[in-house]
Image (tube, rainbow, N blue to C red; front, side, top):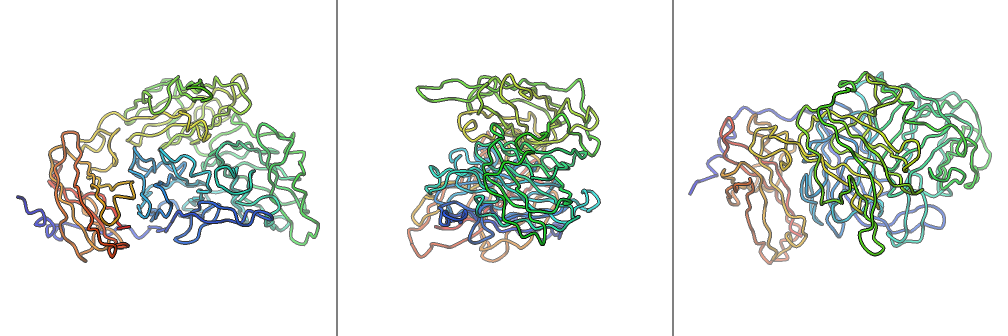
Length: 587
């Protein structure tokens, strides 16, 4: 039998460097709680994100600067498994937060560290993306991620900013009493005014986190200057109102030159003549009453709307639009009856997960031609791409400055905007979801995948199956089932690595504050405290290894936390690799 522990002393002899100090650590937890939505709804049940404590809706704002790495230490205190998806950020596939593709979901009482190493500037958000628990977002689980550019000169000038999160709230899901729209987690009567000084430039970061509602936003008495779409800077466009599909973000600048007390009013895109929720912008020194919640400003009901055709990227495209993409796919959005009273939503006539993935190769320019065949008033489709930005074709940006987005709102069949084409560069190996962000449509099957062919990192695992498709390291995962962590419970540690190679799993009582980089072997995460070998496995012909375990049936072990990591043999240079790490808490 191989003495796998003999490899550990070798790590001390390898050339090592500490992870760069430009790392932002954020501690995030998800848990049931109660929230105050405003007068009359002060004790509503919800599931919330918190900064390692009591949660709020929206959840906390996570903030970093481009060039920094972001490590989100996530703990699941919910009664069911969950994940975190950082919507719009093109992370590596292992950090995408889609169980069954990137990693297993995080079991109740367990944790996972999300690492985003190539942040893109702009306004983003995060939410669950569980394959089996789609309604978690509807319980209140959403938060904001802001990534500042490395220089303020890369952003338009502004004096103050305000995040504006729009949501639809359904008491049939939450178990509470309020049903309707919210702005920053409050009803119209629960709003705290945004106070501005005359002459200031106010930046509003508009985010639609709703499950099924596409909105329109306007500020009474003021136009908007649109500066960013889905986090990406655009050439300024002045409009009276902004439509914002589910999952979309727009940053706008308001020139505060009209003193008063004004309604930041929100309607649904299908009915602009009714305000469903509103905030308040109050100039300093103004003593008038807040606008009535029912007030419908003229620019909301009939003002000029932003249209995609007006958008152009502020910066020239790294990959200009081409008339000869390497691959081109139709994306036909439809629906059909799947049974008595049961509607299915389809892409190219297929219902997820019974789909034919769109295949791409690294470096391809890929074009998607999206068309809706669903004509109903509620049949808008905000189509969201994971892992990539897409470039909108046929806009004011032409071929050299196409606007860059991750979510594109497709209008109902027969209406302007019911067809759009996009292109993207296939530069992020893995398997990626492409889906409608309307929760009902997504749950009903309107999802497909973009699968990379080949093996980009050369580790013997095909990109479309590789949970770390850009890093040639083994992947260690734990169960998403809470029973696998209970005293007396059984489970298995799963490992993904080169077929036929040995893997030695090690355990320690804690991880290092910062991992030690050991190129080309990987990143060593375990401290020496309690370090020992747990067991060994051999990767199967399809690159999977498993190490079963049984937890002693001793309630005193509850709360005991340790950390796991594996060493593995390899045919790659150096002959050895260090796996990803994973915390494990007995619950």
